[in-house]
Length: 302
Image 1 (tube, rainbow, N blue to C red):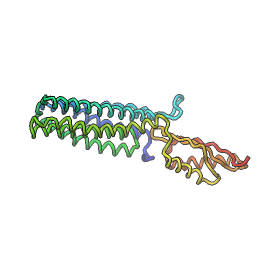
Image 2 (cartoon, one colour):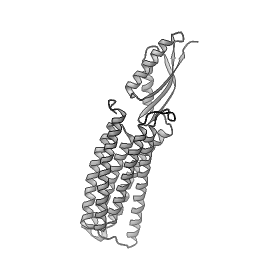
Image 3 (tube, helix red, strand yellow):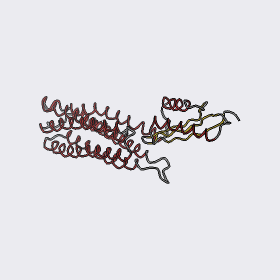
Image 4 (cartoon, helix red, strand yellow):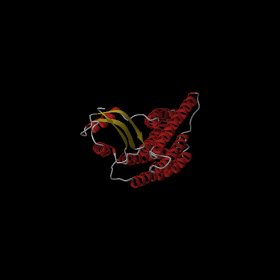
């Protein structure tokens, strides 16, 4: 994240991106329901329901990001950053449930067709609805993911991938509807088959969101390469002979870093304080002003 963006500006940008996504989702949900009913397409109606899940995640992002930006207080010494992580977990879980829901519906449709039941051939408006959804959601994904990375917001990035999952769902819908219109009733099985194929990618995306969010909530340490870099920065300050007992974790978009440094036991307290202040400055220059740092000094000689 660009350190020149303060918390208030970051929150406003996240809210703006999410409101744009919500507006697009509302329009798509209404259009898909109309196209599904008018075009006699159960697949398009299901796609509309999928888009409704995006509206729920938009609400989650807006609410939880506002909470996560709150500063530390008497009951949250480390701030509220993990509320945004919780939002990411909820979005990922919603995405996972949607993926399994699509898979279940696709399997039931395949079984029904194999037992000799025929699905009604959809109308052209349903196919148009699918293509409008694909284009709209892909553009929305690109817009949202760009801002999510710029603002270093896991929740916004997670929401962007939810937009793309909706585009994937619409691809499956377009293949099924297009196949039924062009090839006839004997090919209506293409719809549930395509849906089953796409849901694999949706579930994979959901897993990619849920795992890191769970790791953070369960206090997993930062990656080994980050901890090695932290040690290198600390040991690069004059007066530090070694560091040990490092403890790290992620709190929302910020790092929490704790470790002990070994210094000459005969130095003055003022000098030791200056060394620690320099380490903190270098770490915050590297990882951001909001990095939580706790350093304990120990003498190399007694």
